[in-house]
Length: 116
Length: 110
Image (cartoon, rainbow over all chains, first blue to last red; front, side, top):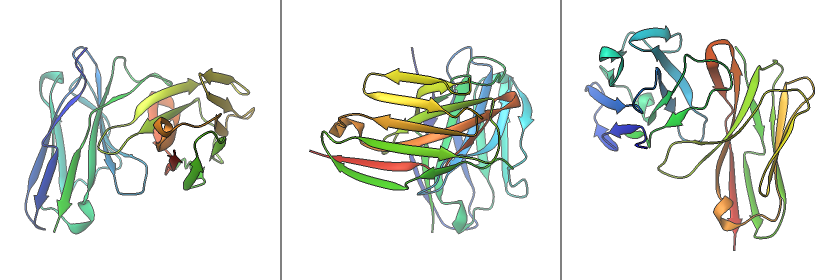
């Protein structure tokens, strides 16, 4: 079974520039998550979609971050404008069901963003 | 906000030794998951525990969920270099909103 695909793997930009990340979840998975993982820390949830609806975006810095999940499949996460503190690995994950507790998350390999 | 604290932050041991990683919170979780993350990859689920006092074994790994469902531990017996990685615990609440701990970086030297 194909896993969660993310691109690009690496991105280097200067502060105040824009950047976008793409995620293709496992086919048939209803829920999609974007996490931010700063070096030396655990992942922090940015946004959670169920199909194409947002379930939780309470920790998404909405003044600069945006995300969408078109047709309930692929998703993009955008940062505009980027700040130095946005340097992190951005992980996409998906799960089969509707977010019941204990459900298994499948993670992609992540996009490593460096903001200079 | 539910917080999970993991200890120690870093552990370096020799092959064949045992190790224990702890995950603690002041909050009660519906479930607790353990993931392992290798450099350049996303976390991979090792186990999910849902019942207070539950113990699960996965080969040389033993996972325990505290009776009050506020803490958990991961014990590795006779560690091997392949066990090297970042171990993350994650507590689940309603809607599968996972809160991750800060992780324990384990290095097993041959």
